[in-house]
Amino acid sequence: MKTYDVRKRVSAQARREIQRVIETHEKFRRSYFWSPGGSAHNRRDNERRFERNNPPVAFQTMQGLLTVELSYDESCKHCYYSASIELDGRTKNISVVKKLLRK
Image 1 (cartoon, rainbow, N blue to C red):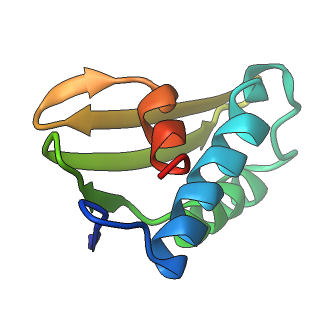
Image 2: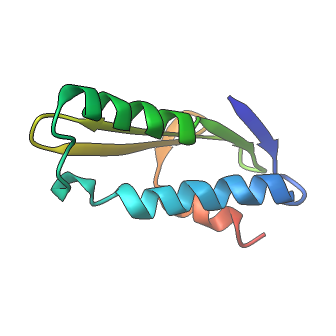
């Protein structure tokens, strides 16, 4: 897992990662209503592509270590997206990540 130190300032690389996380979340948060791939092969390919494009990332902030893990799964009928965002082991929501961009 790649870790970025954003205690003093947000570097260009960290800013790109934060924006990627936010954009991915905005795109996939309503994925339950999407149509999954027609075959098991297509569904697994979609899941692998999502994992490859969205690796877990961590940010060292003044409040502690913020970890972000995004997951996407497809069943025969539905698509499932979830975001695991934790600040020192406590579950948080996407607003904590969005606040990092304001630095």
